Amino acid sequence: MAETQRPPEQFSFRVRRYDPESGEAPYWDEHTVELEPHRSVLEAILQARDRFDGSIGIRCSCRQAICGSCGVRVNGEPALACHTHLDAALKGASDGVIEIEPMGNMPVIKDLIVDMDAVHWKKVQRVTPWLIAKQPVPEREYIVPHENMVDVTQTMGCIQCGACVSDCLAMEVDPGFIGPAALAKAYRFVGDPRDDQQFERLNDLAQDPQGIFDCTHCFKCVDACPKDVNPMGQIMRLRRIATNDHHIVDQNNGERHEAAFTTLIKDYGLLHEAEILPRSYGGNSWFGKFAPAAGKELLSSLPVVIKGVIRGKFNPKIALFGHKIPKDDLKAVQAIYDKVESREKRYELNLYIAGEDEVEVQPAAAAALTAPSIANGGAEPEAATPPSSEGSEQ
Image (tube, rainbow, N blue to C red):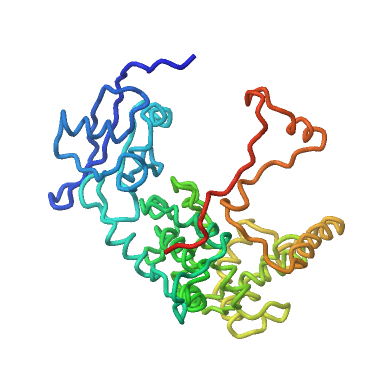
């Protein structure tokens, strides 16, 4: 029997108000509205603006989680106001009052409206966000393999809401970082076989001190994205193509650091902290520490090392000689390397092709899964299928 619609309830929320032109400091403004629990946070804000204070500033348009205009922070987390239900927002409120703030890492124009031109769109323009056609241009259309177009579909799903930019920790530390949204956009063209500037794009982003190697792998952009674009995953793919396919040696030591990291894990099974810095700067071998560049970095890090030893943060013996793990465990780690490196082609597909990761099913349970499911009304389980594509984009 279908669930009946729940009656309206009272919801209290506080909006962080700020008008830079007024010269006053930001403050909290609290309102109470009466709406059905399934209504959105955006509707609550608009009702408060209509009934109590017409000066509340918020940007919105489609109200269907497509345009990305109403990006805000709800209870400290990035969200689309039109796509966040009031009952769900109330559960995340610490004191029973829903908190709504403007997005971070961007200047506030007024209340919940931020200046996306100053940060978000400026960084998107930085990555040349258009296709540079290969020459000669065909008489009719480019023929693109179906898999290639499905591959870039994930980044094409971005609605430019700026949620990932808002929560990017790297941008908080370094505002000049190109950022997750722009770099995800960059992969949309790097991954397109019709683009004529793949190497040039990657070399530009790799050599830039605030480019692909400035990402800190915090996963905040992955959690923030309402469309599962996985910006950090696209940044990692840009890195792998730049280093593994084009062998771009960058001035930021990103390629050297990656090579040193993977080699040390293969040799020791665990990271050898004392070796990672000299190998990243001096070369991927034990002799890397004797290179002038590595020596300079080692000397500059001595104060931090001495403080760590005095405060007991690490064991000098382990730091110098590395961790030791059982030989069988080390062989198991090295077997992973052997399996991956023996492949003729790198297996790297996004979720639209590979699907979501699933827990491995035990043989005893596998048979049960193939039988019709009672919960599914006797129907066979449906396999995940990628979205349809015509294989070309005009």
